[in-house]
Amino acid sequence: MEKWGYLRETSQIAQMAGLDKATGLHRTGLDEYLKVIFPNVNDWIHDKALGKINGVLCRKRPDYRSESLKMIVEFDGMPHYTKAKNILYDIEKTKFYEGLGYKVVRIPFFIQLTQKAIKTLFDIKIQEKMFNENYPSLSIEMENTPAFLCGAGALRMAREFKKFPEQYKINIDFLKKENNIFLSGVDILETLWNYKIC
Image 1 (tube, rainbow, N blue to C red):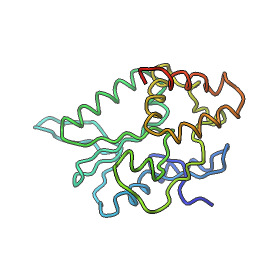
Image 2 (cartoon, helix red, strand yellow):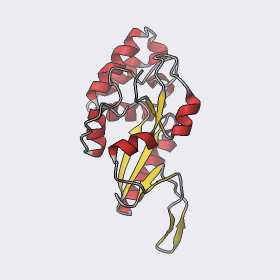
Image 3 (cartoon, one colour):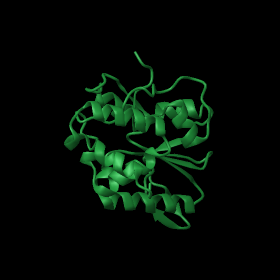
Image 4 (cartoon, helix red, strand yellow):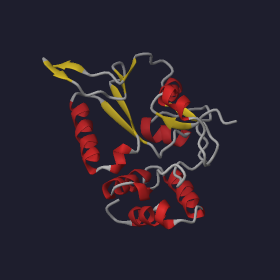
């Protein structure tokens, strides 16, 4: 059995989700991944409002925040790709956090924390074997393919996959094997991937 599973925001959510129907792989909380990526960091704050900033109460609640690293890590699940307003809000929040001096790392639901992905996202080389990059993240069964996203969400997915070409290839190949262009949206993703603005 694989040690590292599909990424979820917390260990509790990962445990409740159970096994993935398409692959039989379990889920792993982002908190568990962060312990390995940053073994000496013990000040992660999960889902708590930032509090007062320059005397003004700020209710924004980052998924994970470390003051010692001055870093915010956000797990962007499906709702971050199904409504254009959510995508705009993510852009605004990222700018806001960066304006406060935080490094912001956004992890899309379809990107798994392989050793290569961790290097790309955090600029940290992990010796331990992490998520097995041979598993796809997208499937019709889970209804998380480009076909289930809004147009802006599908474009965002294609742009983000550009940073993770190995994971893009695994997912494109898997979606093609599912043999249902309507529900996989594989043609949408391939078209956007090859489009110049990506």
